[in-house]
Length: 207
Image (cartoon, rainbow, N blue to C red; front, top):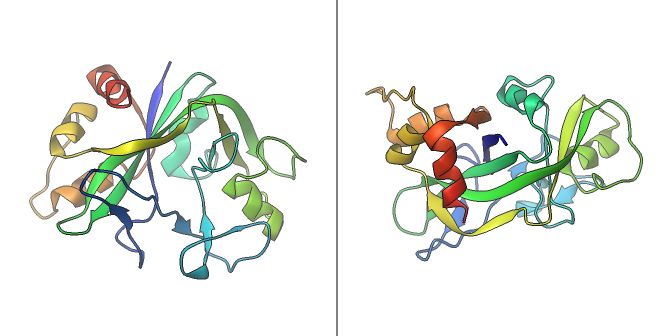
């Protein structure tokens, strides 16, 4: 079964950061929505409407993306039940520099494909894409992935440094004009299928 790596949560451009504790426990802050809050959207940090995706709070867990329209998500068009999506996020320790870490996993149990109109009630109801579309009536051909029951945030974050990046992505280059954090961010901006020793490392890191 395939493994995909997806970068989620707030990043350096947002006014808040996902905090990381010394024991590697963390809190993942979702990105803000581009529109003001209205039901049934989720209200989050600073009272903003937030895009809670992946959603490990609701049952079942879900993750959505614009796999048909957004280049960053094209690889997920090939994702099938049984495949695994591993989530990476930028976390900020109280003292020290931010870094990337593995933070969650979702084993795909079902897929809602190319949503262009309200699908009616179902397991997808709590997903951020569905909530936003019901608030705005803009159904933009997104996909929603349902997670198997063991899908979850990790108990502790797993560091994803230069070493792990080179293991996962065989084509890694490190331009001198970019920091390591910027380079890792550029390699993980798009959702990518991971194979070979990188896939093996990802699977082992989640145990």
